[in-house]
Image 1: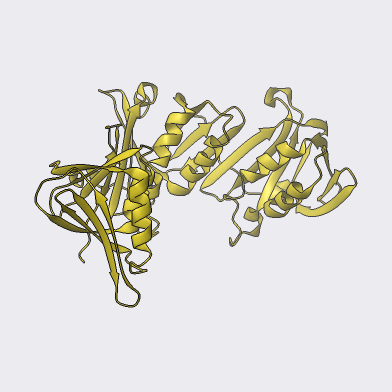
Image 2: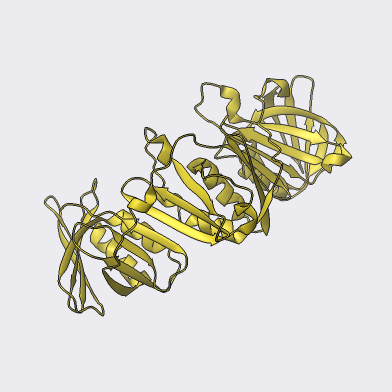
Length: 375
Protein backbone atom coordinates (compact mmCIF):
# COMPACT_ATOMS: atom_id res chain seq x y z
CA UNK A 1 0.00 0.00 0.00
CA UNK A 2 1.25 3.43 -0.90
CA UNK A 3 -0.71 6.68 -1.00
CA UNK A 4 -0.79 10.41 -0.28
CA UNK A 5 -3.62 12.21 1.49
CA UNK A 6 -4.28 15.65 2.93
CA UNK A 7 -3.79 15.79 6.70
CA UNK A 8 -7.22 17.34 7.30
CA UNK A 9 -8.96 14.57 5.37
CA UNK A 10 -7.12 11.87 7.33
CA UNK A 11 -7.96 13.46 10.70
CA UNK A 12 -11.62 13.88 9.72
CA UNK A 13 -11.92 10.27 8.61
CA UNK A 14 -10.26 8.86 11.72
CA UNK A 15 -12.30 11.04 14.08
CA UNK A 16 -15.50 9.35 12.84
CA UNK A 17 -14.33 5.99 14.12
CA UNK A 18 -13.15 6.81 17.62
CA UNK A 19 -16.39 6.17 19.51
CA UNK A 20 -17.05 2.91 17.66
CA UNK A 21 -13.72 1.15 18.12
CA UNK A 22 -13.73 -1.07 21.20
CA UNK A 23 -10.92 -0.14 23.56
CA UNK A 24 -11.58 -2.76 26.27
CA UNK A 25 -12.96 -5.59 24.21
CA UNK A 26 -12.15 -9.27 24.61
CA UNK A 27 -11.13 -8.97 20.94
CA UNK A 28 -8.16 -6.55 20.93
CA UNK A 29 -8.34 -6.16 17.16
CA UNK A 30 -11.63 -4.27 17.55
CA UNK A 31 -9.52 -1.34 18.79
CA UNK A 32 -8.02 -1.15 15.30
CA UNK A 33 -9.07 0.60 12.13
CA UNK A 34 -9.12 -1.30 8.85
CA UNK A 35 -7.21 0.74 6.26
CA UNK A 36 -7.60 -0.02 2.56
CA UNK A 37 -6.08 1.80 -0.39
CA UNK A 38 -8.64 1.41 -3.17
CA UNK A 39 -7.70 1.77 -6.83
CA UNK A 40 -10.86 0.24 -8.24
CA UNK A 41 -12.50 2.90 -10.41
CA UNK A 42 -15.96 1.57 -9.53
CA UNK A 43 -15.27 2.48 -5.90
CA UNK A 44 -14.05 5.92 -7.00
CA UNK A 45 -10.60 5.20 -5.58
CA UNK A 46 -9.25 6.59 -2.36
CA UNK A 47 -8.45 5.66 1.22
CA UNK A 48 -11.16 3.58 2.87
CA UNK A 49 -11.32 3.58 6.68
CA UNK A 50 -13.58 1.07 8.40
CA UNK A 51 -14.32 -0.04 11.96
CA UNK A 52 -16.83 -2.15 13.86
CA UNK A 53 -17.77 -3.18 17.39
CA UNK A 54 -19.77 -6.11 15.94
CA UNK A 55 -23.02 -4.18 16.48
CA UNK A 56 -22.22 -1.05 14.45
CA UNK A 57 -20.07 -0.91 11.34
CA UNK A 58 -18.82 2.23 9.61
CA UNK A 59 -17.05 2.71 6.30
CA UNK A 60 -15.85 5.95 4.81
CA UNK A 61 -13.83 6.72 1.70
CA UNK A 62 -11.50 9.71 1.57
CA UNK A 63 -9.95 11.33 -1.50
CA UNK A 64 -6.34 10.27 -1.83
CA UNK A 65 -3.71 9.67 -4.49
CA UNK A 66 -3.16 5.90 -4.60
CA UNK A 67 0.14 4.56 -5.92
CA UNK A 68 -0.28 0.98 -4.70
CA UNK A 69 -3.37 -0.75 -3.34
CA UNK A 70 -3.29 -2.77 -0.14
CA UNK A 71 -4.71 -3.01 3.35
CA UNK A 72 -3.87 -3.61 7.01
CA UNK A 73 -5.17 -2.73 10.48
CA UNK A 74 -3.55 -0.48 13.09
CA UNK A 75 -4.58 1.09 16.39
CA UNK A 76 -7.36 3.57 15.60
CA UNK A 77 -6.60 5.78 18.60
CA UNK A 78 -2.83 5.89 18.09
CA UNK A 79 -3.12 6.68 14.39
CA UNK A 80 -5.64 9.42 15.19
CA UNK A 81 -3.35 10.91 17.85
CA UNK A 82 -0.42 10.91 15.42
CA UNK A 83 -2.45 12.41 12.56
CA UNK A 84 -3.67 15.31 14.72
CA UNK A 85 -0.10 16.30 15.63
CA UNK A 86 1.35 16.15 12.12
CA UNK A 87 2.31 19.40 10.38
CA UNK A 88 -0.15 20.91 7.90
CA UNK A 89 1.29 19.11 4.90
CA UNK A 90 0.31 16.12 2.73
CA UNK A 91 0.70 12.77 4.50
CA UNK A 92 2.30 9.72 2.86
CA UNK A 93 1.18 6.29 4.05
CA UNK A 94 2.89 3.06 3.03
CA UNK A 95 3.24 -0.50 4.31
CA UNK A 96 6.08 -2.95 4.62
CA UNK A 97 6.04 -6.74 4.53
CA UNK A 98 5.81 -6.95 8.32
CA UNK A 99 2.41 -5.19 8.41
CA UNK A 100 3.93 -1.92 9.56
CA UNK A 101 2.31 1.36 8.58
CA UNK A 102 4.88 3.99 7.68
CA UNK A 103 3.69 7.58 8.11
CA UNK A 104 5.61 10.49 6.61
CA UNK A 105 4.64 14.14 6.72
CA UNK A 106 7.24 16.80 6.03
CA UNK A 107 10.16 15.90 8.27
CA UNK A 108 8.04 13.77 10.61
CA UNK A 109 8.26 9.99 10.32
CA UNK A 110 6.42 7.25 12.25
CA UNK A 111 6.22 3.49 12.01
CA UNK A 112 3.08 1.96 13.51
CA UNK A 113 2.82 -1.80 14.11
CA UNK A 114 -0.24 -3.34 12.50
CA UNK A 115 -1.85 -6.66 11.66
CA UNK A 116 -3.00 -8.52 8.58
CA UNK A 117 -6.29 -7.15 7.28
CA UNK A 118 -7.65 -10.70 6.94
CA UNK A 119 -7.66 -10.99 10.74
CA UNK A 120 -10.18 -8.15 11.09
CA UNK A 121 -13.79 -9.24 11.72
CA UNK A 122 -16.09 -8.98 8.74
CA UNK A 123 -17.95 -5.69 8.75
CA UNK A 124 -21.63 -6.20 8.09
CA UNK A 125 -22.88 -5.00 4.74
CA UNK A 126 -26.52 -4.88 3.75
CA UNK A 127 -28.12 -3.87 0.48
CA UNK A 128 -31.75 -2.97 1.12
CA UNK A 129 -34.01 -3.24 -1.91
CA UNK A 130 -35.32 0.29 -1.34
CA UNK A 131 -33.55 3.30 0.12
CA UNK A 132 -35.50 6.35 1.26
CA UNK A 133 -34.05 9.85 1.15
CA UNK A 134 -34.23 12.06 4.23
CA UNK A 135 -32.98 15.65 4.62
CA UNK A 136 -30.00 15.60 6.98
CA UNK A 137 -31.24 18.56 9.10
CA UNK A 138 -34.55 16.80 9.75
CA UNK A 139 -32.90 13.58 10.92
CA UNK A 140 -30.40 15.53 13.01
CA UNK A 141 -33.21 17.40 14.78
CA UNK A 142 -35.18 14.21 15.40
CA UNK A 143 -32.17 12.51 16.99
CA UNK A 144 -31.34 15.58 19.07
CA UNK A 145 -34.86 15.82 20.49
CA UNK A 146 -35.16 12.15 21.49
CA UNK A 147 -31.82 10.46 22.16
CA UNK A 148 -31.33 12.10 25.56
CA UNK A 149 -34.37 10.22 26.92
CA UNK A 150 -33.15 6.75 25.88
CA UNK A 151 -32.24 4.47 28.77
CA UNK A 152 -28.61 3.73 29.67
CA UNK A 153 -29.64 0.76 31.83
CA UNK A 154 -28.37 -2.25 29.86
CA UNK A 155 -30.80 -4.57 31.66
CA UNK A 156 -33.66 -2.73 29.90
CA UNK A 157 -32.34 -3.44 26.44
CA UNK A 158 -35.60 -2.57 24.66
CA UNK A 159 -35.28 0.99 26.00
CA UNK A 160 -31.60 1.37 24.99
CA UNK A 161 -32.52 3.00 21.73
CA UNK A 162 -34.96 5.24 19.91
CA UNK A 163 -38.14 3.82 18.45
CA UNK A 164 -38.79 4.76 14.82
CA UNK A 165 -42.24 4.23 13.36
CA UNK A 166 -44.27 5.64 10.50
CA UNK A 167 -47.79 6.90 10.04
CA UNK A 168 -48.49 5.94 6.44
CA UNK A 169 -51.88 7.60 6.48
CA UNK A 170 -50.39 10.97 7.46
CA UNK A 171 -47.11 10.40 5.63
CA UNK A 172 -45.14 11.13 8.81
CA UNK A 173 -42.26 9.52 10.65
CA UNK A 174 -42.09 9.48 14.44
CA UNK A 175 -39.20 8.92 16.84
CA UNK A 176 -39.77 8.12 20.52
CA UNK A 177 -37.41 7.44 23.42
CA UNK A 178 -38.03 6.72 27.09
CA UNK A 179 -36.12 5.46 30.12
CA UNK A 180 -39.23 4.91 32.22
CA UNK A 181 -38.87 8.28 33.98
CA UNK A 182 -39.27 10.57 30.99
CA UNK A 183 -40.28 10.43 27.35
CA UNK A 184 -39.36 12.38 24.23
CA UNK A 185 -41.29 12.31 20.95
CA UNK A 186 -41.04 14.10 17.63
CA UNK A 187 -42.94 13.85 14.35
CA UNK A 188 -41.83 15.08 10.95
CA UNK A 189 -42.90 14.73 7.33
CA UNK A 190 -41.33 11.65 5.78
CA UNK A 191 -43.60 10.19 3.12
CA UNK A 192 -40.80 8.40 1.26
CA UNK A 193 -39.64 6.51 4.36
CA UNK A 194 -43.22 5.98 5.51
CA UNK A 195 -43.86 4.01 2.33
CA UNK A 196 -40.83 1.75 2.87
CA UNK A 197 -41.01 0.85 6.59
CA UNK A 198 -43.64 -1.73 7.45
CA UNK A 199 -43.33 -1.71 11.24
CA UNK A 200 -41.62 0.17 14.04
CA UNK A 201 -37.95 -0.53 14.79
CA UNK A 202 -35.63 0.30 17.71
CA UNK A 203 -32.37 1.93 16.63
CA UNK A 204 -29.55 1.63 19.23
CA UNK A 205 -28.55 4.76 21.14
CA UNK A 206 -24.84 4.35 20.36
CA UNK A 207 -25.50 4.05 16.64
CA UNK A 208 -27.67 7.17 16.61
CA UNK A 209 -25.00 9.09 18.51
CA UNK A 210 -22.50 8.18 15.77
CA UNK A 211 -24.99 9.14 13.09
CA UNK A 212 -25.51 12.51 14.81
CA UNK A 213 -21.75 13.13 14.72
CA UNK A 214 -21.72 12.51 10.97
CA UNK A 215 -24.65 14.86 10.50
CA UNK A 216 -22.90 17.52 12.55
CA UNK A 217 -19.95 17.56 10.15
CA UNK A 218 -22.09 19.99 8.17
CA UNK A 219 -21.24 18.79 4.64
CA UNK A 220 -24.16 16.37 4.34
CA UNK A 221 -27.47 17.66 3.01
CA UNK A 222 -29.36 14.38 2.71
CA UNK A 223 -29.04 10.74 3.66
CA UNK A 224 -30.23 7.43 2.29
CA UNK A 225 -31.79 5.02 4.77
CA UNK A 226 -32.97 1.44 4.33
CA UNK A 227 -33.80 -1.67 6.33
CA UNK A 228 -32.96 -5.31 5.77
CA UNK A 229 -33.71 -8.04 8.29
CA UNK A 230 -32.54 -6.86 11.70
CA UNK A 231 -30.22 -4.13 10.41
CA UNK A 232 -30.47 -0.57 9.16
CA UNK A 233 -28.20 1.14 6.65
CA UNK A 234 -27.66 4.90 6.63
CA UNK A 235 -25.37 6.35 4.00
CA UNK A 236 -24.17 9.65 2.65
CA UNK A 237 -21.88 10.26 -0.30
CA UNK A 238 -18.79 9.60 1.83
CA UNK A 239 -19.85 7.32 4.68
CA UNK A 240 -22.04 4.28 5.23
CA UNK A 241 -23.19 3.19 8.69
CA UNK A 242 -24.74 -0.23 9.37
CA UNK A 243 -26.42 -0.81 12.73
CA UNK A 244 -27.98 -3.90 14.19
CA UNK A 245 -31.47 -3.06 15.40
CA UNK A 246 -32.48 -3.80 18.99
CA UNK A 247 -34.73 -6.81 19.15
CA UNK A 248 -37.63 -6.54 21.55
CA UNK A 249 -40.91 -4.76 21.94
CA UNK A 250 -41.02 -1.06 22.62
CA UNK A 251 -43.53 -0.16 25.35
CA UNK A 252 -46.89 1.41 24.55
CA UNK A 253 -45.68 4.98 24.96
CA UNK A 254 -49.11 6.47 24.29
CA UNK A 255 -50.13 5.45 27.82
CA UNK A 256 -47.56 7.89 29.23
CA UNK A 257 -48.65 10.89 27.18
CA UNK A 258 -50.85 13.19 29.28
CA UNK A 259 -54.52 12.80 28.33
CA UNK A 260 -55.47 16.19 29.79
CA UNK A 261 -53.69 19.44 29.07
CA UNK A 262 -54.25 20.86 32.56
CA UNK A 263 -52.64 24.22 33.29
CA UNK A 264 -50.25 25.63 30.73
CA UNK A 265 -47.72 28.32 31.55
CA UNK A 266 -45.20 30.00 29.27
CA UNK A 267 -41.72 30.65 30.64
CA UNK A 268 -38.56 32.24 29.16
CA UNK A 269 -36.46 29.20 28.27
CA UNK A 270 -32.95 30.37 29.06
CA UNK A 271 -33.92 32.22 32.23
CA UNK A 272 -35.69 29.11 33.50
CA UNK A 273 -32.72 26.92 32.62
CA UNK A 274 -30.35 29.17 34.55
CA UNK A 275 -32.68 29.21 37.58
CA UNK A 276 -32.95 25.40 37.52
CA UNK A 277 -29.19 25.00 37.32
CA UNK A 278 -28.65 27.24 40.31
CA UNK A 279 -31.24 25.46 42.44
CA UNK A 280 -29.96 22.05 41.35
CA UNK A 281 -26.60 22.84 42.92
CA UNK A 282 -28.14 22.09 46.32
CA UNK A 283 -30.33 19.17 45.24
CA UNK A 284 -29.54 15.66 46.44
CA UNK A 285 -26.70 14.32 44.29
CA UNK A 286 -28.41 11.02 43.58
CA UNK A 287 -32.04 12.02 43.00
CA UNK A 288 -31.50 15.61 41.77
CA UNK A 289 -34.91 16.32 43.30
CA UNK A 290 -36.38 19.80 43.11
CA UNK A 291 -39.81 21.18 44.00
CA UNK A 292 -41.79 23.29 41.56
CA UNK A 293 -44.70 25.35 42.88
CA UNK A 294 -47.22 27.09 40.65
CA UNK A 295 -49.09 29.86 42.42
CA UNK A 296 -50.81 33.03 41.31
CA UNK A 297 -48.35 34.94 39.14
CA UNK A 298 -45.35 32.99 40.41
CA UNK A 299 -43.26 29.92 39.58
CA UNK A 300 -41.09 28.88 42.54
CA UNK A 301 -38.26 26.35 42.18
CA UNK A 302 -36.57 25.05 45.32
CA UNK A 303 -34.33 22.30 46.65
CA UNK A 304 -33.52 21.14 50.15
CA UNK A 305 -30.46 19.14 51.08
CA UNK A 306 -29.99 18.23 54.78
CA UNK A 307 -26.22 18.09 54.30
CA UNK A 308 -25.83 21.32 52.35
CA UNK A 309 -28.74 23.68 52.79
CA UNK A 310 -31.54 25.16 50.70
CA UNK A 311 -31.97 27.04 47.43
CA UNK A 312 -34.93 28.88 45.93
CA UNK A 313 -35.63 30.80 42.72
CA UNK A 314 -38.78 32.69 41.66
CA UNK A 315 -40.02 33.54 38.17
CA UNK A 316 -42.96 35.76 37.28
CA UNK A 317 -45.58 33.92 35.20
CA UNK A 318 -49.06 34.48 33.83
CA UNK A 319 -51.00 32.04 36.02
CA UNK A 320 -54.10 32.49 38.18
CA UNK A 321 -55.14 28.90 38.92
CA UNK A 322 -54.93 26.80 42.06
CA UNK A 323 -51.58 26.28 43.74
CA UNK A 324 -49.82 23.12 42.48
CA UNK A 325 -46.74 21.57 44.08
CA UNK A 326 -44.84 18.93 42.17
CA UNK A 327 -41.45 17.25 42.45
CA UNK A 328 -39.10 16.61 39.50
CA UNK A 329 -35.64 15.37 38.73
CA UNK A 330 -33.87 18.60 37.78
CA UNK A 331 -31.75 16.90 35.12
CA UNK A 332 -34.81 15.60 33.29
CA UNK A 333 -36.44 19.04 33.20
CA UNK A 334 -33.21 20.69 32.04
CA UNK A 335 -32.75 18.14 29.24
CA UNK A 336 -36.29 18.78 28.01
CA UNK A 337 -35.90 22.56 28.11
CA UNK A 338 -32.50 22.47 26.39
CA UNK A 339 -33.92 20.64 23.38
CA UNK A 340 -36.88 22.95 22.76
CA UNK A 341 -34.76 25.31 20.68
CA UNK A 342 -37.27 28.07 21.38
CA UNK A 343 -37.07 31.44 23.11
CA UNK A 344 -40.08 30.52 25.24
CA UNK A 345 -41.17 27.13 26.56
CA UNK A 346 -44.47 25.75 27.76
CA UNK A 347 -44.97 23.74 30.93
CA UNK A 348 -48.22 21.79 31.15
CA UNK A 349 -49.23 20.29 34.51
CA UNK A 350 -52.56 19.05 35.81
CA UNK A 351 -51.85 17.87 39.37
CA UNK A 352 -49.04 16.97 41.74
CA UNK A 353 -48.91 13.26 40.89
CA UNK A 354 -49.37 13.54 37.13
CA UNK A 355 -46.70 13.73 34.39
CA UNK A 356 -45.76 17.16 33.11
CA UNK A 357 -45.29 18.04 29.45
CA UNK A 358 -42.55 20.42 28.33
CA UNK A 359 -42.04 21.86 24.87
CA UNK A 360 -41.67 24.96 22.75
CA UNK A 361 -44.31 27.63 23.37
CA UNK A 362 -45.55 27.16 19.80
CA UNK A 363 -46.34 23.47 18.99
CA UNK A 364 -43.65 22.11 16.67
CA UNK A 365 -44.41 18.39 16.47
CA UNK A 366 -42.23 17.47 19.45
CA UNK A 367 -43.19 16.59 23.01
CA UNK A 368 -41.25 15.89 26.20
CA UNK A 369 -42.91 14.25 29.21
CA UNK A 370 -41.34 14.13 32.68
CA UNK A 371 -42.72 11.90 35.43
CA UNK A 372 -43.22 13.46 38.89
CA UNK A 373 -41.16 12.56 41.96
CA UNK A 374 -42.24 12.07 45.54
CA UNK A 375 -40.47 14.62 47.75
